[in-house]
Length: 376
Image (tube, rainbow, N blue to C red; front, side, top):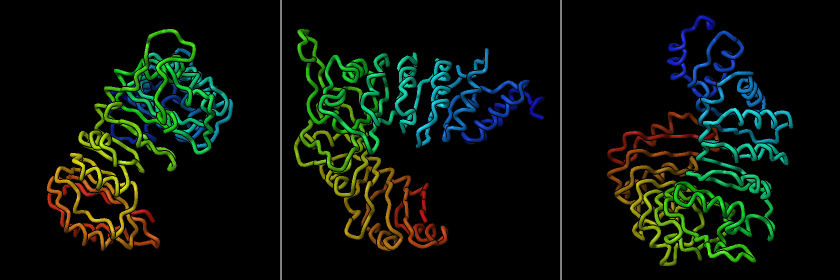
């Protein structure tokens, strides 16, 4: 049947498939050599196992194949170190993806083999990079990376920073400092592990006689994620000056007491933080339209402070606190709320319908799309 499948019909079928089904369909089309692989099958892919990654890379590496030219978004999301053969397959496949714009590697599965990073650095149209870091020396492999629109460096739990390493000694001539310099005007989304910004960036490298300065200001960043290790604090930073266009902020345990922080909050329309910081931000004048609570709701947390501008609210709680939350919701004045996402942690197995029925009693007007997630 598939061998006689019309190309346009295959494309239409792809629109009804989830990502995993599209990948399976693409691999089936490769097995049936007479079938043309629809472009939309491989335009956006998520590879969750080394086995799937190997199959996909072999599809890309078929002689005279142009399938790789259609790949624009690739998420390699398996959380264990891959074998050397799989790592080499992925590195070779990246060469065949000249139009790749968005790449997510949340876990450094490649281990000590940095060839993948060198190939990433040479991608001509890459604008969005999400990279998990276990060894800070891997950043040195990104020296050819073009100016980025979205840059996310996140540390693994066992990341060790060295006083003389590339992160703590970022300057104008370092790989990371040079990347920030090239991306100053284009960068709109930024995620960094805290040690990078714990002290001002040196204006120039030691023994550098040039007058060029690397000012630590990123004027186009709208999405800023400084979530990091719990012990890190950065209340000394003037975020209002460093990120004058920031609208969305993620940073639990942020110290909001300084006047500089207040100026920063006046622009925020989206904030992900613990309940205490959410309340402080609202009381300081943050016109939030989106709020995500990073800690569980408990009875001692009132909802009266939620702003009337709020359109989206995400929170979590223990199942035993659900009835108290419903009672507390009577004090919330959120006339513009359009979506509510609740994660309910249940200690014992209960029916999802019970949670949905209970939450339907929330006295919140104009709530058109409530999303209820129950974790057993």
